[in-house]
Length: 234
Image (cartoon, rainbow, N blue to C red; front, side):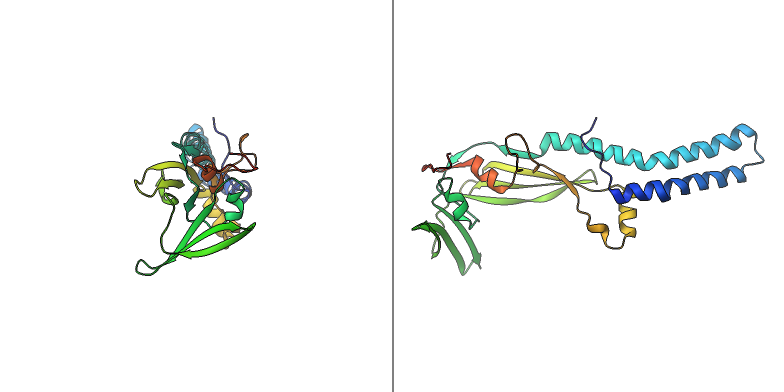
């Protein structure tokens, strides 16, 4: 039905220790208030209320877990639409890493539109060198797509490899963040600090092809292919 049950340890503890006993206590009070009703109604109404109160938070969590599984399977992960030959790309500086895979340069930038600061990173004599240049040489860049909220509990964002000239997306790494239910949020909030909670996410987890997980580096290597191969292979 779904891959993971999205409930925090704090939320589970609060649900079992505080919420369920409180729901049963409220239902018991209702039974006392209805003591003048016929026996069937006197007990069936509080029982129905107890079932509703206890199950409602779990139904929300089941919905989040089910929807998360569908969204993750359909949209999250590494997606390569097209590959391109390129010896470098824009918006990185770790040439030591990418040179192992055949890239001859990467570029980073800053400053203002009127006074841009363009830096080209290369390897010279086995060492990384950063050189200020006047123009970018890259035909491709990595680009972030702003998060989009989905169905209240989810947001989707991606890192893309894009053609600078045409804007065409050659590949992207899509991540979906999964936010907690009301019961989780309530008990996490009671801690005062959020208990260090971060949204769950999918799209970057390990796979048989990528046992260490997937990040921007895997996206670059899957999308851009340098003409010069290295000892690491293509």
